[in-house]
Image 1 (cartoon, rainbow, N blue to C red):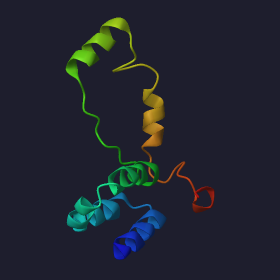
Image 2 (image 1 turned 180 degrees about the vertical axis):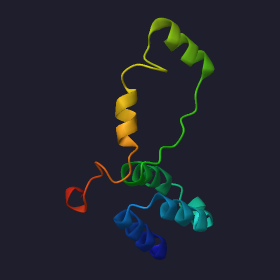
Image 3 (image 1 turned 45 degrees about the vertical axis):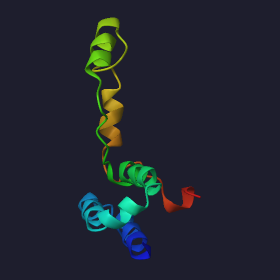
Image 4 (image 1 turned 30 degrees about the vertical axis):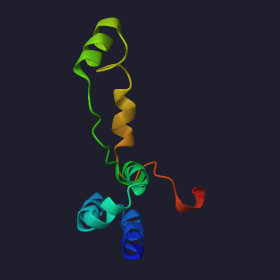
Length: 98
């Protein structure tokens, strides 16, 4: 796992999502044993590489929010999502993290 963490830091420094994906694939067996790391790795993927985990949708809730204007599928939030997906832009620097 120390090798994984070292390589993860290098991938974050390079800002290369393809390196992150191949790293996760290479270490998938070891990562399966460390369940608590899953949420942290998802946050790293989103913050530094613009990789978002697809959310599971509930068709009934989507339909209800569409009927009552609950802000599900449309709205003005689309612009923010596109900006957040750009890798490297807006990612926190190492100095701003604890």
